[in-house]
Length: 107
Image 1 (cartoon, rainbow, N blue to C red):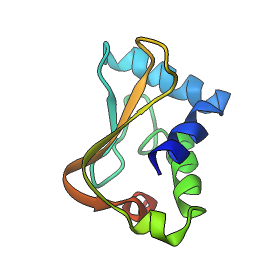
Image 2: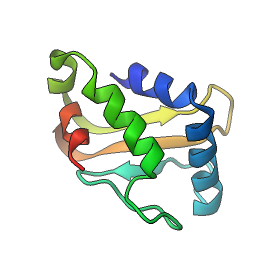
Image 3: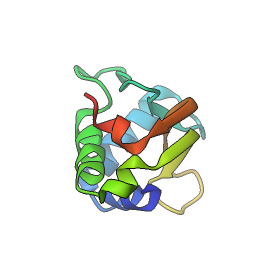
Image 4: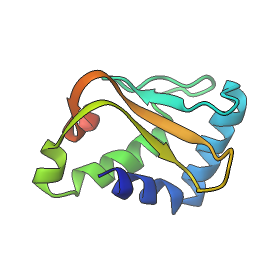
């Protein structure tokens, strides 16, 4: 599932731009931006939670994945990168506990 979501984010220029801008304005400086910790987090300068376009892309990817993938249990955090280049923006999803990919569908 990580590869599915990461590929969806990497292949959309609009999402790349949104995450890149959030990364620059957040002062993340090499750290990942936490977008979901059991609830979608609101980014500075955004009206909705979870960078709406990014949240939607993740929800579509998870929503159209096989049931077994959505039911997979994850422990802790998942790190997604926008490219393999050093210093590329990164997004983190998850919490300190256990969760399922289907939990990301809760808006």
